[in-house]
Length: 263
Ligand code: ADP
Ligand code: MG
Image (cartoon, rainbow, N blue to C red; front, top):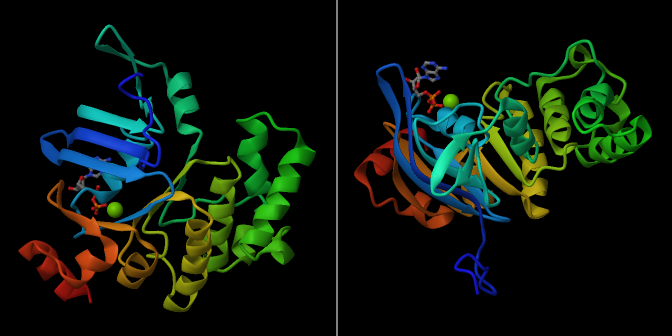
């Protein structure tokens, strides 16, 4: 049996990060991150502004190249080919292929303003994955129903509220049938009354078994939907644990300080 053969019943890491470092010039932003996210689990990442949360997500889907360390997504080493114990950089087209099963939703919805909701959703499946239009449209309709926006399918982003735009952005990411979804403060730019509808869609996605990494300040969401919570500060994982347990009873004084300030 190979050393990597899955053990029956064992949790399988969808994301496996080891020794991850990232620098911007002299700014050492990620300082040795080790983190695993199992398939089907939701990990919420909290921490002060500037602690490297966005950079971490961007290294997971290879929007950024790490300076050291490894990121595996579903067993795939992001950005490199490994041969004879050495790492070789992959070409951009190969990296793009590795990134395809990873969906990302940003704070700003980043929809194409000149496309309707449904056009936004079918764009990548058609252009990137080469799907025929009718196949892409059929899935887009299902996704619009799932995020509760079918009646808005022909509306342009300017005609939609922030919450509706963010739900379209989630549907658009799901259209590529991702194995992993990354959310970077998906509700931070929304008016308070629109936060709930986006969190509801994310909760439904978690219930469907999607593996998710969610950077958020919504502690209630982290407690209810998160399996694990990671507290980051100064580019390091200060504390990681069971979501309810960590939020109720943080062990590290910095985690405690942070939670006291936001709760
Ligand atoms: P967080 O998401 O936790 O607020 P970030 O990952 O956005 O933190 O940023 C961490 C640090 O990295 C900050 O000091 C920020 O200024 C810096 N940083 C982030 N992105 C870049 C970039 N593209 N170029 C240079 N510095 C960056
Ligand atoms: Mg950020």
